[in-house]
Image 1 (spheres, rainbow, N blue to C red):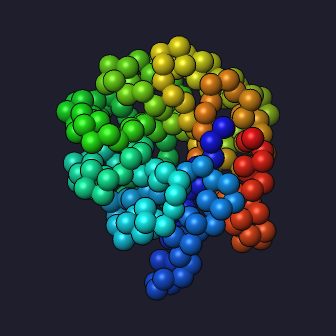
Image 2: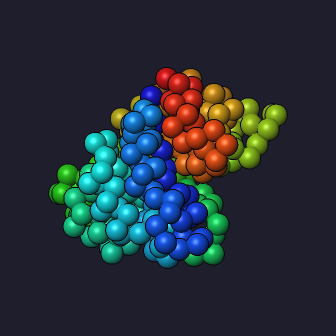
Length: 235
């Protein structure tokens, strides 16, 4: 299973004081050396953490793929094309949110995606959609010709006991259905060591993208050690 390390919150900390420290590019390099399979960065429309210069410098500094998370807008799609981005995950955005609150409303964005996704495909960009684990979402993905989904695990991250078991079982069933449709499956949001251990054995799950927990835990144990531990957990 692949591990994607999201470095957004290194930039959040940098931007809290301004200046250049801590450097998200350095975090990307350390994560790669520690075993990350890809780096993930979300270029938000409000630029609250990662900015355009960060993206350009990350691309120049790492030898593993960069997955760029963007909102479904023409500007962001064109940015990905201009900067030769090879992996894009399309995510929802609200300016007032503290973090991504759920999956993309694929029905609301259907017409835009149907029109604009071919531009990404023509430029050899691998596209995934960040979605809530729902069978109906998978059927809409097939209509759009999307062959990769990252499922939002935020509800699992915040659930315990029977509710947690129910949500993990739901995720497992949805992933199994997605796999029958030939869709590549990833997951992420809110995962820590414990939650990761509870979902890593789900069949057909290929990749986990984790950021906030890894960056937060690295305050105490160091980024390299935390990435190594997470990579060991997911195998």
